[in-house]
Structures are given as C-alpha cells and as structure tokens.
Amino acid sequence: MKKSALPVGVPEPLRELGPEGMRAWLRVWVLGSPWIRLDTDIELVTILCESIDERSVLRLEVLENGEWRDRVALRTLDDQIMRMMGDLGLNPMERAKLDIVEGPKGRLAELRAARAAATS
Image (cartoon, rainbow, N blue to C red; front, side, top):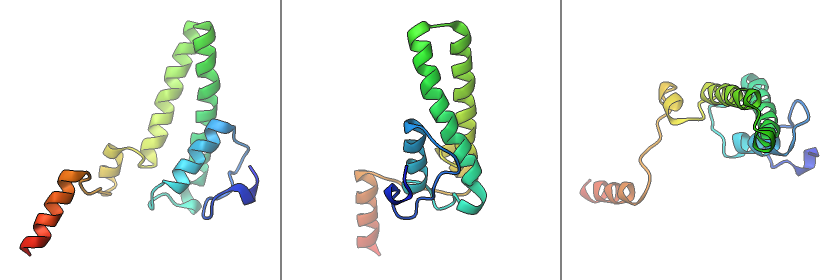
C-alpha cells in the first residue's frame, strides 16, 4: 500500500502485508487505542498483522483440503494471534488489566447519564 493511500496518522507497515494483514493494520491504528504506541508497539502490530495474513491462507487450505495437521496449525496460530491481541490490550479482559476502563455503552447508559445529570 502506498504511503499516500494510508489514512492520516497511520504509520507505514514495517514489512509488506497482504490484504487481511493490511485490514488488521488499519483497524489497529485507525480504530485502535491510544495506549498502542508507535515507538514501542509497531513490531508487535506488524507480527500480528503478518500472522493474520498467514491465518487467512492457512484457513483456506483447511477448508479446501481438511488435513488434520493444517487444522492443528490453524488453531495454534489462532492462539498466538489471540495472545498478541491481548498483549496489545485489544480485548476487554486485557484492557481491564491495563486499567483502561471503557464506560457503559448503549441506550441504558445514556438514560443513566441523563438521569445523573438531571439530579446534579
């Protein structure tokens, strides 16, 4: 992907990524989280995205051929990807460990906030 094609604030990947990896790259940096830092996390994000590319190829192999060894490799890769996502705080449990708390969302949260504002 050309540098000019990247949204503002999204760094250039360290290495070439395939389509699934590039989508993950954009999700991490665009929708991503303020605690993910370019100076310390870019290598981990790169490896995560490369693994996601690898997963997409391996998953097609499993669906087409159904070899048990490929299926085991896919599940192992899934575990590695989930661990990396956790290391980056990209799941609720790991975010909580990082003391990154998201406020309640949805209509009920809006009603509670409006009620609290009305009573204060």
